[in-house]
Length: 116
Image (tube, rainbow, N blue to C red; front, side, top):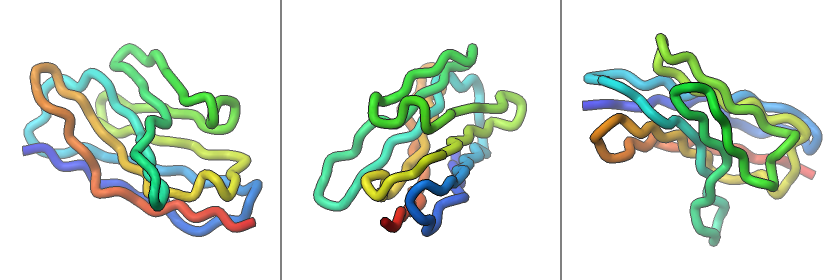
């Protein structure tokens, strides 16, 4: 069984930065995609960023130029560097991994709150 442990959320002023991390542990075989979604109160969960096993990245338009996703394949860890944060970025951020041939595994979520 695979577990994801997230860390790095918190309260920050608008314009500030946070770095989220997500470490996978357990019976891990081959991880394809790793990524982050977020869900704000009263809204649906939405994609933030994805990184493939080869390092290709995809970002939602609303974070382009501000957020950077990265990963360490040897450590089964993915990070999300968030700069120039805005109050609209306030949400619970969830990491996920997609292993080859297995369903998506989700992290427990970490709260990010950006004050104006």
